[in-house]
Image (tube, rainbow, N blue to C red):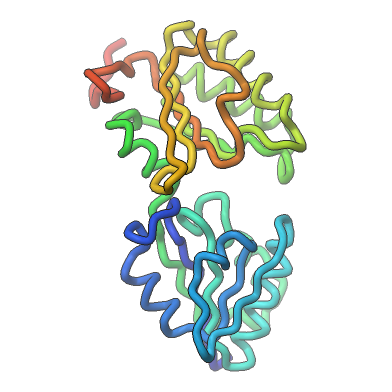
Length: 245
């Protein structure tokens, strides 16, 4: 293989949150592959071929990238946020595992700022202690697994960040998530709904668990649930660095 592949995180939305390393990889690329909205963030230029594709074809994207790199192309696979967080880095390695002829491929994973971290920074420091991230979509895992992990995280006292909370295809699912949280957590637990962080559509809303409604979330929203010690300080939301029994 004479080409290379970079799997790049474009950050949460603002161009200012794209790392210089990713910017350089895009400048050097001959091909950019990714989900349609993410490829649309890359400016066209002479010598660059854009390969936008629809959702749920991650393995096809990874296969195309390996084939192009094998032909000597310089390929960037783009993801939003960080490519290793519910994104394309894992999909690439999943395909690579089935292609021993490509195991020596020149692959780089370029980190990006996740929506979770961007949202937390906007709000203050709600992830200031132990936390976990859960993808609420049941596209790649059973809903029962989502529910089990959610319950254990709540019982463990973790702050939680939820990706893909509520889609048009499964509008009922986030309502079920709130039901489980109400079974496991106190009603005053603070929840941040952070929509489209770092874009012109950015909106942040903090409510208690008792006040939370399913329609407060959509697929552009990251939901951060504080731990039992999370609290407000003025307009800020933060979780103390220490914990007591």
